[in-house]
Image 1 (cartoon, rainbow over the protein chains, first blue to last red):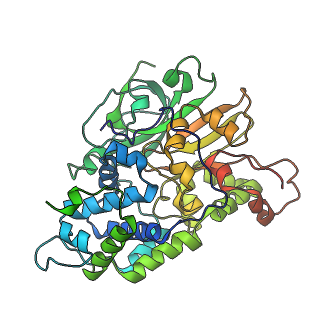
Image 2: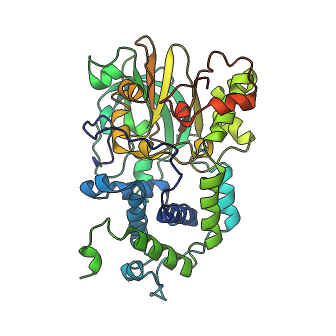
Image 3: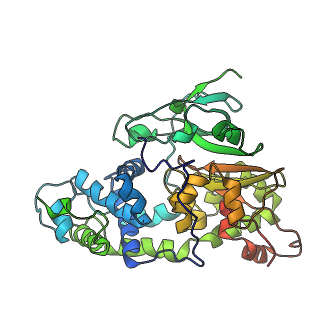
Length: 222
Length: 199
């Protein structure tokens, strides 16, 4: 989706405000929405790509106006309704009203959450799948403009780059975000020159590296 | 019509978070002790001091450094440094010819296990928008003048790999031990928007 979240290369958002000795959270509600999101995740209600897809669907003007954790709140509210975990009345009242039906899973045991905060929780898929590209290959980032979730940002579409590393096999965010078919494939670090991306005025030596799935690229003659 | 259709989507934030928490607790979808453990971990346990100790170790132990650059995920996992937003990690070394800098243009991906949760500026629209287009302008704003002879390489962590910058060890730090070195290493130097300097 060509949404407001896809910010790379845009201008005029103003200065980057830095806060000296910034606390991890600024308010209790930030702590709460962060913890609720992390705790609800592993129960199996949704995956990280579905969360990202939901955040990206926030109306653009609201997305830009929202504080960071307000986007988390909007996202989790949408997810609990979409997944039929809670009803709107329950969100409005803060009380459990629906006693039958609804998609409720038991809380994830404490130990599992503790484990996931300090042990590998792999997004990698342990499948032998052939890599379409090798290190050193020249590629073209496809000009994809899907209406669904994707992790190929606009600023590299149609640009030429070079494969510099193969990270192994991962799920494809595009389908994983929509509960769709499993399309595990290789993900690579791909290097683009700043001039390829931004034109001749960009610094001659500078580069941008980004991680791309097999489906996002096609071969160019070396 | 439900009242939700009329309200500003950003109104009543505290009340709505409280409501969501109350009903999820009441239904047993989450447990209070789990929420407390999560907050405690990210507020009190993980943070840039972890990344700083990794950097200091890499500066003083060449074998560790080469394993870290070759396979950071396994090397860090052996040290108990892994988990959510930090299972697949790459460490990128700054040199006299190459300066690395990290962003997530699409959301806010960040190596939580090594740096804790990201600062607000890292998640802000101006940083996400500008980092890939004008990294030198950002570096200048952050007080780092980068020579034209140095390649500035921006890593957009748009997939499931998280990036940590291994900054250059500052001149004059030769006599310092690992703990003293770790004290010098700032969060921003591991994002790549700062360099490490002697105090």
